[in-house]
Image (tube, rainbow, N blue to C red; front, side, top):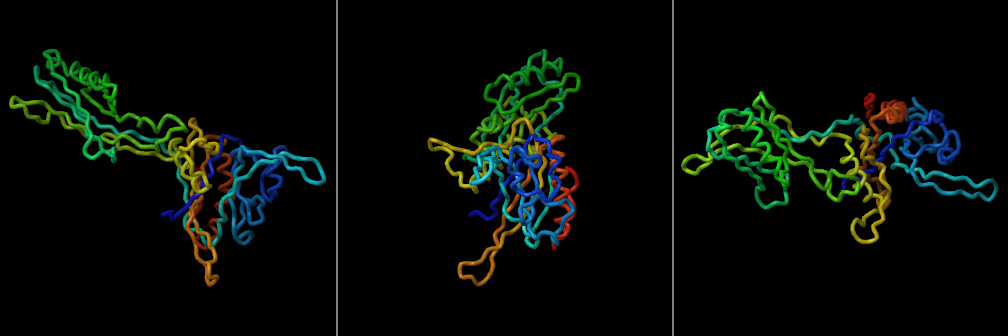
Length: 350
């Protein structure tokens, strides 16, 4: 059941148009040649009259606002009198009404982190077979535990030098074409580390079919005793917990694809597949401003108002151009949000 539809506005690596300062009308923003034109991927806030919201304006000036972004799409306007102009399509958010805003927050970009485990090795026993096993916990569709294991029999050279043993075990794991982890041994420190690989099929590009996911695993380093049973040889400890991050291109790609469904894009597999252009770039990272609000509507029997929960997500590129756009938008949003009945605190620069 759909409980909170959302729209996402992903800014591009575009410098803010300094001529847009406040009260410019939408028709000027739509033109592609006017000094006040909104650029492709540039974000601004509009008031109830669809003019650019003046920084510092409050709900006393406008009881509702809209988020607007310039898109790549352009078209020709041919009025009955006058010269034809080329106009840019502007994407608008749902109305954000002062008394119906429930949350106003910001999230700064944070890099993803792959899961890591490490262990300190000691001298192995020559002739003993060692088993390193990874049990994976991210394959929810698998009916049981999925595991990979690698076996190595220590030699006399391994018993004489821990570095030789650690490097040899790491080489066995890394030589496996199907391994989902990378093994690293640091000489002279006796440190053996396993790091999850990036999940294939969801971290290669915008056209990936699968949604972003991460490899989650737990390793065991055992040996085979004289009775053929496994005994613990070394005890791994987790060094880095997996983190999906914030504002990575993979997450923004998935967010944008999910938002298409609310815009009527449902076909993802039947030819021909016609999809909108991505605003997400694989070479960029993003800071987020999130507005959770409600939209009132009259019930079918016209007796009272109901509300539906929605969300508006604004993403600014995490660089100088994005910072310029973000600074202007926050100068519009912060005073207005502070003046709402909920009195939201300002969002500082992300």
